[in-house]
Length: 108
Figure 1 (cartoon, rainbow, N blue to C red):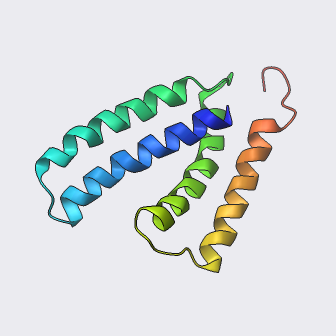
Figure 2: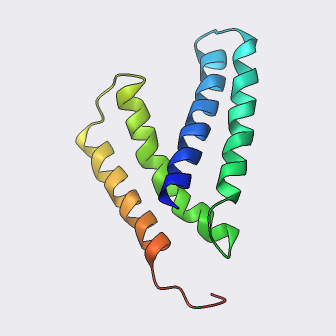
């Protein structure tokens, strides 16, 4: 399940970055083609997560997305996240893990 969340985060961040490159860095409109494809792939991957409820899957994904975005910042944009980024990312990832692995009641 965590691997699917990580794959979804990579696809969403890369797809959004393609839009960012076009809109903020004056790249070609052709950047939108892979951006749209990646965002569609992200949505598909997120539907593959084992969860009885979409809202719970999306909530858990949020923490993984935040942590993945900070990795993107470091690896792709070559900006070292500061301590506040790291604290916030850690808190959000802990929250995601609680949602993913918490003992949920059936139907709740």
